[in-house]
Length: 307
Ligand SMILES: Cc1ncc(C[n+]2csc(CCOP(=O)(O)OP(=O)(O)O)c2C)c(N)n1
Ligand SMILES: [Mg+2]
Image (cartoon, rainbow, N blue to C red; front, side, top):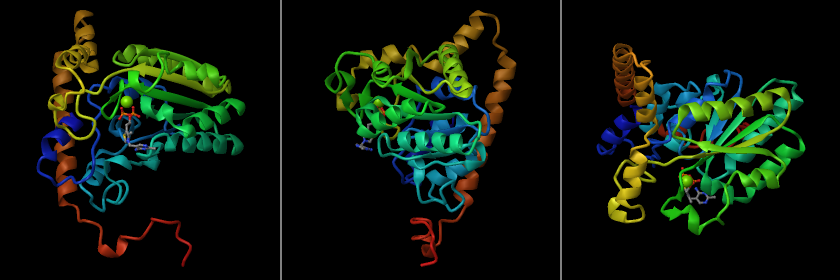
């Protein structure tokens, strides 16, 4: 619902940052975050709205960030690709592919040295596994048996390039074996399947048994960047999109609950109304917030040393 609102309001051109929507991929952060505590840490990349919200990130601060306002979670300087909410353990997102994989592994090592009981989750896409930083980080996490869960959201595309022309025909999870990291793959559009796989991986990290690579098959239902449909671009067929639309994780789970007689329609309507109210409030808060003052431009860009 948050992203549907962003997609609708984006055309007003008041949100001026590149914005990567995760509609179609919601089950993964939901199923993973259900196992995390407030002191566990999460890192992500350019497509991070779902990861931020599922960890408990503040909605007002996120929307204000997309609007470039000083009340935004990165003081209006980062936009959609630089979400952060330290209070809930969402440590940050950055769009340089795989860059936060090594930062997350470093955070896990830091937590280990400080004697803190934390699990670190790092989310990234299929293309990030083509970066050297991903492999260095996996190797280091394996050698130190660090409490990291690497979560690969394999949505089959890197911008407009399909996986099949970029990687050999083997599961991405096989890269875990190469690095001596436990690995598994599952259906990323089935929230219960995600929940089950994440349960084992998070428990393993918490026990001190080392990292796990989880690969989830999923699909983004919107364009790579921004809300527009991409059929005219021709890199995905209408049939392919329709097939994945039929597997929309929200619809899949709603239908399963209904079939089990477990869907409380009235409760769902109340929850949807409350969520809509929260979203309206966040948008109003963002639009009423000031832009950062010009003298803030260089602040927090580099560590402040007094120079
Ligand atoms: C190191 C690096 N190279 C290239 C890019 C440009 N780029 C931005 S998003 C993207 C595709 C990312 O694909 P994937 O990791 O599968 O995530 P998805 O967008 O599918 O969620 C690319 C190539 C980048 N941000 N960083
Ligand atoms: Mg991808």
